[in-house]
View (tube, rainbow, N blue to C red):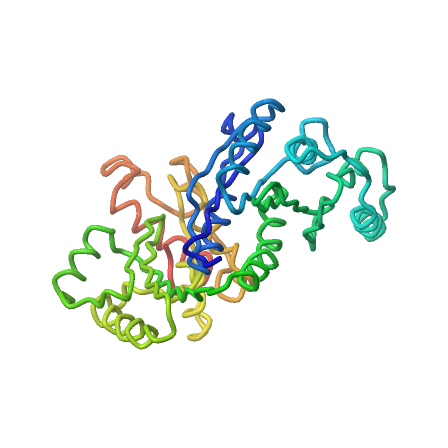
Length: 352
């Protein structure tokens, strides 16, 4: 089967997703990784922890799709139903899987934990299933073919799923008759909106090559521009488009791949041997938080100040009472005094 013929559906499970307590980022991760092989997701269903509902959905998917990826419901608690549901759909019993037990024993031993009955539930799996390794979590994934549909079950913990998708994508690529190796180049930009970027490209590049797919993903504080090709022969066109966008967007481009604004700023400061401080009010320390998430940020970021109340702006950063009274807390005059006070107290070269 070729990648373009592959019918893929996703089943996301969990009451926490349905209630909004947990935001579903896993379906986006799965779709993004499958897209590397030019495989699209045809249908996605999110359902709560309801046995009858989950069984109906999985039976319907198994009858329609070539591949179903189930995400969630593999843990040690009573509301983790995925193994039970798959066994019912496949018409097989549940049984203790020795490979899953060995994984649990190793996982517990590495953390000096006792393997208890609750954890052991994660090793009770549909008879005949194969294990999908989980490099970091306690719950292994597993898969079973029902009719002509391959069903892969994965845990809902995002970090665990991210690691497991490496193996799943590699296995899919090996099984496809004519796999497409999709090449995706991502440019991270700052200070551009989707509509303005699209218009700039349309005006400057009316001859944009059809083999290079152009996409945008807006976020805060940056926007991603994505250039995708589906063949090795189109890589030259992709490279040409990259150069044209660098010329067109200039300093709006922060970098490529997963480059973050804070990472780029800190990198430039380290290159110059300079430092940065922050003086925040309404943002409540958000900018400092973005900076300190970057490894080794202390080399260029030594201190930040969150001065929300007016009296703290005065006592901590030296903002004058007269300026606050005349211009108000949200004003350029006060901002300038906050920045000056932060620079003076931190000894930094720059202030935000």
